[in-house]
Length: 303
Image 1 (cartoon, rainbow, N blue to C red):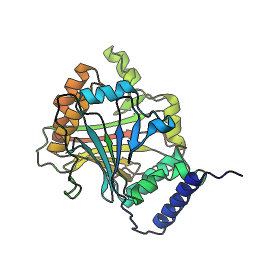
Image 2: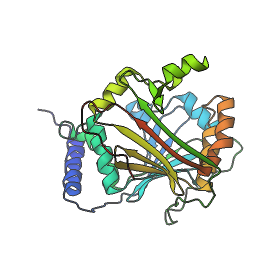
Image 3: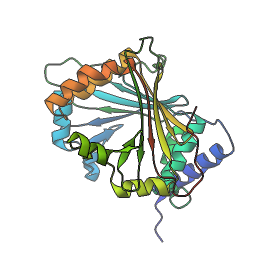
Image 4: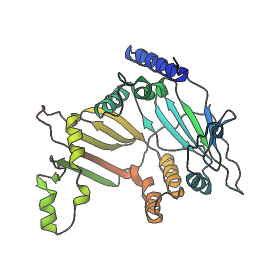
C-alpha cells in the first residue's frame, strides 16, 4: 500500500485549522516569507530547488516576458488577521479586509456554490483556512528587465498599508436592479426589455445568463450590495458582510499603474484604467442587485 505523505500532512493541518477556527480560537502560526523565483521560461524555484527537476512549468513564457517588459520584478501577497494585502515592486496595492465573520461567510459561499466542500475534500476545501491560520506570505519574483535596477523587497517590519480616504465624493450613484428568472434586469419596475424597445438601443450586455440566476437562487442569494466608503468598497451578500476592497490614494494609483503596465489589456482599456481607477474613491455609490427569492422568506438589505 502506497501512502502520499505530503497530501496526508496537508489534510491533517487542514483539519487542525478547522478545529481551531471552529472552537473560536485566534490561533496563528506565522510562517516565514516564501520567495518563489520564476525564470524566463516560467519554471519556479523555491529555496534553490528548481521546478525544472519535476517538469513543473507553472507560467507560460509569454506571460513571464510580458511581466518582465512591464518591469514588475516581484508581487507579494500576505495574509494577516486584518485581511489580504498585496504589493507590486514593494508598492502597496488595494487589498481585502477579512474578519472572522466575513471569512465564515466566504467559506459558506464556497460550499454553497459547490467550489469545495471541506467535509468531502479537506485538502482543497480548507486551503483558505490554512492560508489564514498560517498567515501565508508569498513573493513571486520575475526576471529583471535588462538595463533596470533591481527593486528591493518591502521591509517586513514596516506597518501594513491602511485604507482610508479624505477626498470628498464628487459623484453620487444609487442603483437597484432586480433580475428575473431569465436574467433580465429591471429598474424602478421597468424591464430592460421594455427599455430596449422604447429607446431603440441594445441593453443585453446587462442581462445575466439564466443558469447563473438559477445558481444564485439555489444558493439562497437574494441580493448583493456594493457600497463605497472612505475605507473602500464594501460588499454584502444578503445581509452578511463579505469584505472591503481597501483603498487609499496611494493604493489606487499603484493598482492602476500596475494593471495598465502589464500589457495584458487593450491599450485603450489600459488608458481608461490608469486614468479613472485612481478616482474611484470620489464616488458615493450604493448599488443593489436583487434576484428571485425562490419562494424563501425575503431577507432585508443591510443597513
